[in-house]
Figure 1 (spheres, helix red, strand yellow):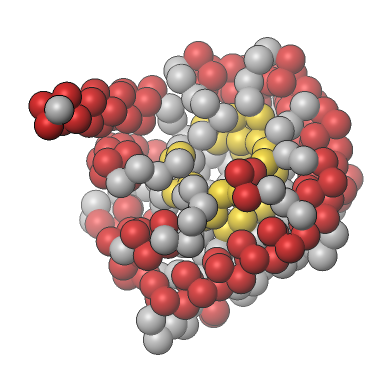
Figure 2 (figure 1 turned 30 degrees about the vertical axis):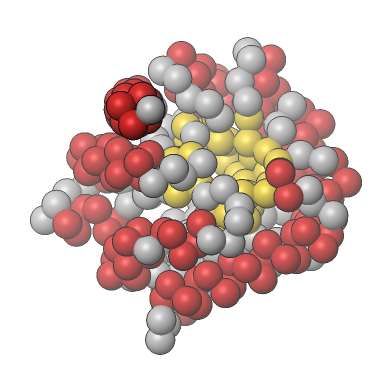
Length: 265
């Protein structure tokens, strides 16, 4: 899943693709590099970010979604708002990527169910301006699993088809670096919920801290290393700012897996 942030304040590339034509060109580049999905978002969810208006979010994402869908991309919309999700589906999006897992907008789950599109429910405890105050766990794996299970059950109860539902542990959202590493080491506990997993680690702060404080643009190598490990664990997708190296890493893992199966047979 390649990321297109049509925002002025995203942590890694804020402002780079605020212009619709720049965002469309970047989305097309990600598609050429092998992105299976292009994820278009118009509202930053970095720590400390403030909400944008509904009109601003719509104006940012809709022209980009229309153009990328017309270019043949499988488009997801990164939004917490049901009106944006509905408008994005009308514009050609086929997946709604909701970092709040339906907790921000009570209308979201039913809207997605009515449209019959894919839905990604992330683990979330609160808005970006206060989420780091909520990074308190006695057992982060057990608690994230339980809270994701609740979002899974709510989505299914709302009528979202099980085959359309993906879960996301929400790395960095109400989580410290230590929490992120612990969750990554125990993804099997989350996979046991019975839904595919999306993991979004690209260029995040916990990787920068591991690399002695490297800025976001210098965290791609570490992200690719993590993608390789995640591919071996069979996650559904990784959400990344760059695509080609991640596609290559996944291809290597897949080829080795085929060889291992053939050797056993």
